[in-house]
Image (cartoon, rainbow, N blue to C red; front, side):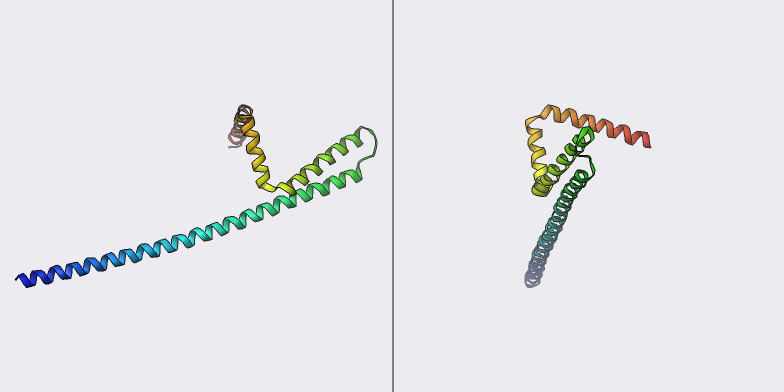
Length: 140
């Protein structure tokens, strides 16, 4: 009877060891899969970020082209000419900024502006939120 009891304990110990090994292997595989998924998600985010930066640069180039077109079409003198030139200058400098800085530069500048002027930033965001709420509730 004692031998049967020891054999049973040995078999139970073997089963427990096999279960531990299987659990360890499953954990290892789960970590590998998680690492692969995280790497692929990082690659996808990088790709999307690159495409967004490319699109921002394209918008900047479009703004600069529009500035050139405005300069060609507006009269050289008079109030209309001065206004057209001012608009073209603004478009050109904005386009240049977008091409050089991209979305990351725009985000950094916005963050710095909010840090320097927190109260106006909060008031502005409240106002924009209120306007968005009014627009979305009137359309419903």
